[in-house]
Image 1 (cartoon, helix red, strand yellow):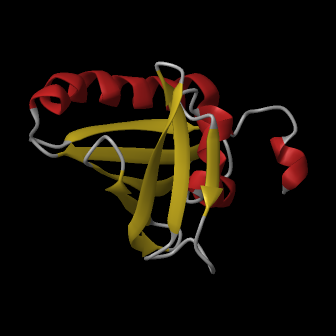
Image 2 (image 1 turned 45 degrees about the vertical axis):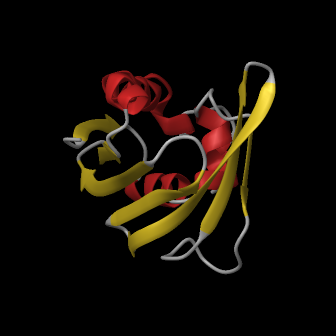
Length: 146
């Protein structure tokens, strides 16, 4: 399937955005589909790091394990679904801009009938969540964690 790409400028400092979004454990704070997220591997967020994210489908937990497949500090972070219902690969590219951080997103999914139909919807959802909440970076209290 053709990759879906999008981008948004988050009005928060570059280093904060990169650190926050490079840790999928934070996704539960800003992506409403996840009810739990945890890092399951040792060490930093670089290549090979694994995260388990859980959602609910028809009242039952559904878990996806993502593995970092690319990581360039302060530049790129990318993951693939190592297990779970969606055969998804996605990446974030970061760029410092005046007044914040530009985050470019790229999603790729394997060609399956259901995925083919859902791809545009999933891409729109991801973009709206980033735009609407600033990827959680504008959440009250986050600045106190710096």
